[in-house]
Image 1 (cartoon, rainbow, N blue to C red):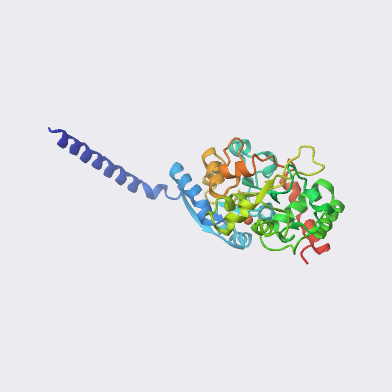
Image 2: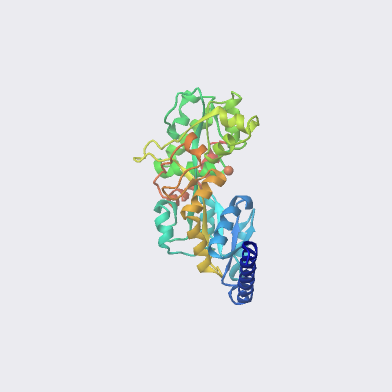
Length: 354
Ligand SMILES: [Fe+2]
């Protein structure tokens, strides 16, 4: 046998083996199909979570039927009731997650993998919901500002009169922060803070988080609050684009609360829960456990410049350099979320968005 024919023979044998393996897999499918899939309802952009879902399927052989639900996730699952195919419910913002729990469409999960990966303040005490990634509410500041530390309370200091930019107070990113201020200092102090920040506004509280950086570059304001992942999005944008110019115009400081002993920064989350009527409960738990595993957590960091919820996972280099390691406010998110309706009412009371 020549070297060439030996190689050809090996190739043929491999092709044959491959074919019979495929045939086996196909004939084995009908009995296993139901057990090897799950249905994910998500409000997150499909492009953002697809790499995570693909990695999960490759590792577990569990097929994920992803249903992108832009609005009305709770209403949909409620309406589907016991017939709902949803196994995992995924969304952003603690308020949205608590709505799912309060709406009765989640179920408790006990998992050592989830409990060891996710700090206790970032999950429901009864396993009704779990954080999967974090976004910090940080300070964007003009580079000329001599700031190395900042407290959220400082934003109400009259020295920033006419120098503050921020999006609407009624946006969930801001009502969650106001709820945290109420949880830390009480309603009266939070109201005083809102009035102080309102008096310092350089422009109406409107627009998006990136507009804070845009308006710092435009000389309209010196400081403002916005989410951490936008820093990564802007600083990684193509050279010469507006987004890149905005990102390059700011420095970022991780604020803390004045009275909190541990000095943590306010975070919001992306998270998930197992649906109350999950037909594939065991697979649903497997997906959640995968999402907090090390490889999945570093995908979160890369895909959207979010902070991993699991300790010891490398940050995206742009976030690491521009913002740095995060020390999270230790107050339980469930405690903060209790005050979100009160926070929203306060925003209206002081006419913050008027
Ligand atoms: Fe956002």
